[in-house]
Amino acid sequence: MSASTLRIALVGNPNCGKTALFNLLTGGRQKVANYAGVTVERKEGRFTAPSGRVLQILDLPGTYSFEANSPDEQITRDVCAGNYPGEAAPDLIICVADATNLRLHLRFVLEVKRLGRPVVLALNMMDTARQRGIVIDVAELQRRLGLPVVETIAVRRGGAKALIERVDGEVPTAAPAQPDDAASRAGLHAQVREILTATVTMPRATAALDDALDRWALHPVFGLLILAVVMFLVFQAVYAAGKPMSDLIGGGFGWLGEHVAALMPAGPLQSLVTNGLFGGIGTVLGFLPVILVLFLFILTLEESGYLPRAAFLLDRLMLSVGLTGRSFIPLLSSFACAIPGIMGTRSIQDPRDRLATILIAPLMTCSARLPVYALLIGAFIPIRYVFGVFNLQGIVLFSLYLVGILGAMAVGWVMKRIRRDKSEHALLMELPSYRMPKLRDVAIGLYERGAIFLKRLTGVILGLTVLMWFISTFPSPPAGATGPAINYSFAGYIGRGLQYIFAPIGFNWQISLALIPAFAARETAVAALATVYLVGGEASGGLGHALAGQISLASALSLLVWFAYAPQCMSTLAVIRRETNSWRNVAISFGYMFGMAYAASFIVYQIARMLT
Image (cartoon, rainbow, N blue to C red; front, side, top):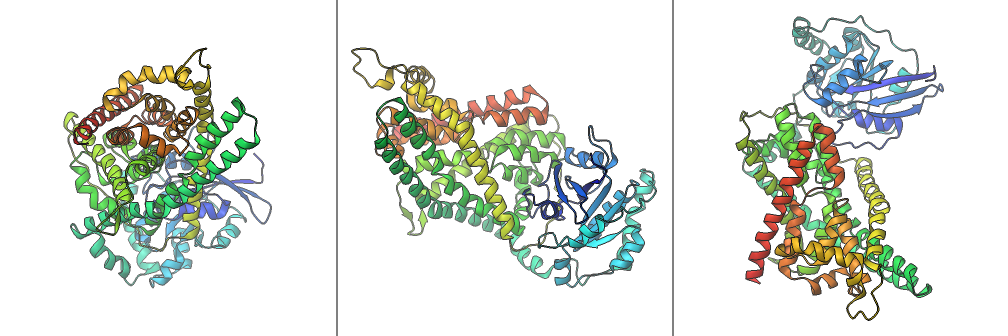
């Protein structure tokens, strides 16, 4: 490493604005949210200071103390102490503290100072502190702490200028290292009170607006009602805003595919381009607006600070099924993808609760399921309004998310009954102040979700779609064959073989075949079905129209339930293996989800068939 490169570690309590500061300094696009536990791994970025010095910055997981109790806290402690495998000790530690809540943050600042390394304190959210009438004597705070103190506003352009100037200069002198024992830790609280008394003038402990909103948002009855209404309206908006754009994109790809086909000679290449690429990939891409609209609302709720309140409200309910409100944030992350949700369990201190959350997280309805849901709901659920206001399709989508949540609660309840340790762990978490969502942070979040979707679309989904086209096209039917050509292809033989397993839950051979690539990426089920039906000449009116003519409503409902509970994708299984270091847990996860999905689909199919 160059001698002019300075290694800097960003540390601080959860939700202090550390990752926002990291993004401001490095131009990074790390996820930022208004709740604790977003950063669960070390992230690295670089930028060049005005002097030409390269600053290598590590964004470490938030922690309240170096007395580490969870995996993410251990990462922060080991990196700062220079004990992390393969990681050199930082040259400088920037400890980020929320200026509106120094009472909570100063204790950790003192712990960082005791490491005996150069430290700079970044007083973040100074704009919010001034708005609340909080006065901080920065000079006196710096004198009493014995380390440089710099004001920052991580969410404002230029809000880290003073910090850059400070770290671009001479590295501050480190205070002598102090012993880390119970006696020395006991004196930290008294020291914090003394410093606060001398340096901070605070008109009130919490913001008046927060108190007014929380009287309703945290009410045991009205709070739960508000949460239910908010989530219900979100799914109504998904169909009201996202579905028209999806139809437009799907129709556009269909039109484009027809014109491209007219310019190409008939043959396998024409079939690959029109049926495989435009038909399969174009069908999946059409559902991107639905995904983005959903995450627009979720990101807005994250930024507002409402989600930790939801965790608090649901804590008692989650305790009843063997979890805690601490599991809420990882489970909520799983609505995007189970992988970051499982990684987010590193913030859960109790190993038993962490394992339970890991095994339950894949039951949350991830964004990969949305294309399947949107396809089947659009094909089988009519556009009808309940009470003249609520879209029936949006109600069904909300119900599917609710089915996943109820299934997760049922699994948690069973796990609670069969485990030996039945103790309960109370939820302790910080409730951040409400704030208006930052357009930049929401835009970054939407960009990330869109980029992930497109990356999967042009990677694994594209590869599997081409493979599905190949096995649906070859071999050619023998001479004298009377049935559709696809019946004599590899896909036809494989699908009919699988149908013996899935016929009791109402799946035809095309759906049975699509379940194989769906294990690699759930969205691929849509591309696979589109390719198979197009090659078979049965999707001229669109995939939704083909499904409505080929399968019954009972089969469609069974398929929806299957995808609500079906075994997660291979990537999720790999993450479970990595996070738990156990193939046994991987087998348990796959096995119980397969059995749960098959049983639920069988019940739904048989009941729906009798009723319809």
